[in-house]
Image (cartoon, rainbow, N blue to C red):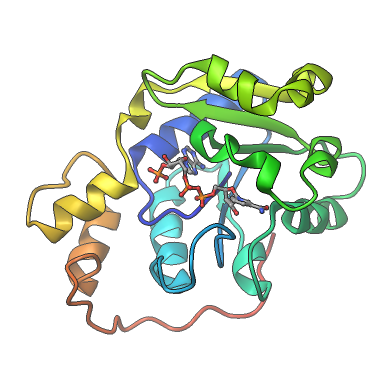
Length: 212
Ligand code: NAP
């Protein structure tokens, strides 16, 4: 499950659960991007906050884990590198599904080693209500034809929730209750994230390496 998670919300969690059920996934590894390749450095919240919010949100679900694989790798978080690292850790017998937003996947042709990616994993493209699948088909063109069996759209009505909207709500003092887990909401309140007046949060910086 790749994303910036700035912040993580119920749309992401519902997507992960739906994908796991639909495709029989043993576990879902949330991989917060360290430095999202298409965003200028500094445009996203510090990785340690996004990582901690992702941990807080996923703790109750035994099938969910969080990996620092992208955060620990210096430079842009290219998905091809993430997938190679995960393959190396889990071995050749494990099949990987990369779950992300269909809007993010619309850019996939601009991703590093785009065509190689389809050989490394299946893609689950989570769509917001109103998303027209034909957009993905026309953007991917012949690639969609070639890899149709590796690209799986998944409609997720809960993705009406968006991180952009949540950040804007916090900035303007509106409620975000019921859009994300309480623990994440409390973390945002405690740290002052998204208000433009963030205070240092008393947490230990992440260690190098993790269990995943
Ligand atoms: P983004 O542009 O911030 O997101 C695009 C849209 O997809 C947003 O509407 C976003 O909603 C949604 N989205 C993102 N992740 C999602 C998820 N896991 N489940 C459901 N919806 C999701 O995308 P991004 O976060 O930067 O990138 C997504 C993933 O693609 C990351 O793992 C990133 O590393 C990878 N990526 C790789 C390359 C490359 O290899 N060159 C380039 C770009 C992206 P919210 O804002 O509500 O999340």
